[in-house]
Image 1 (cartoon, one colour):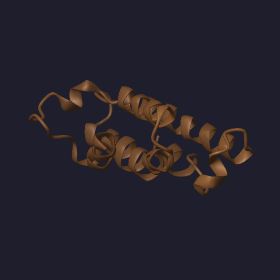
Image 2: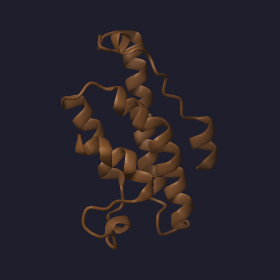
Image 3: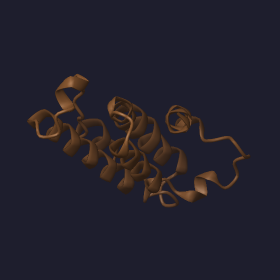
Length: 119
């Protein structure tokens, strides 16, 4: 899993003007890469309970979400596409990780993502 996260994930960052045209090759490529990374996030977090939780959270949240996915989400204009991306990321996260949190708090690895959701 670590090798896949470190070597297989590539989501290019293009200027917003370049990817606003959804039919452009750059936009399509960036979207395909984003959704491939979301699928990888889903597969990584499925190992929760089998592999040590700190390792799963490091790979899934610190590396995949914060290093790749969040940059793309932040560069996606606010609207239905952004909401869909956020929903898919949230759907990947195991509910167990949030059971012992106090109201209004989140996992440290999710602070930036949470701030985006609040906006």
